[in-house]
Length: 119
Figure 1 (cartoon, rainbow, N blue to C red):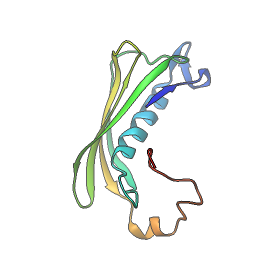
Figure 2 (cartoon, one colour; figure 1 turned 120 degrees about the vertical axis):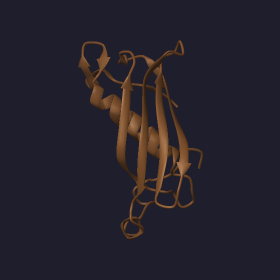
Figure 3 (cartoon, rainbow, N blue to C red; figure 1 turned 30 degrees about the horizontal axis):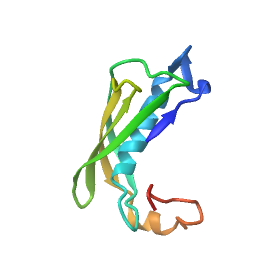
């Protein structure tokens, strides 16, 4: 996925706030395990982040999530953010845990616009 982070998410001039970087990595890692139908919703139990270089605002970024090992109740995944030159800016490893089925069943997923890319 390509994304350009707007300036209002900067932590200091020209650089994306580290918490926003973490949120992007968390989201892309979690979505890599969604699969489906139906989608697999998971909580992040642990997120380990490595910041390699400043992530710039206002410039195109390449964001990649990869599914790791999937078990019945848990899964692992990774997320990475690259600049246009292919340099790794930040990466994360996530341990994910299934959202209880009864919680997912209480939500009308279509009504809230949930879908997996490519559908």
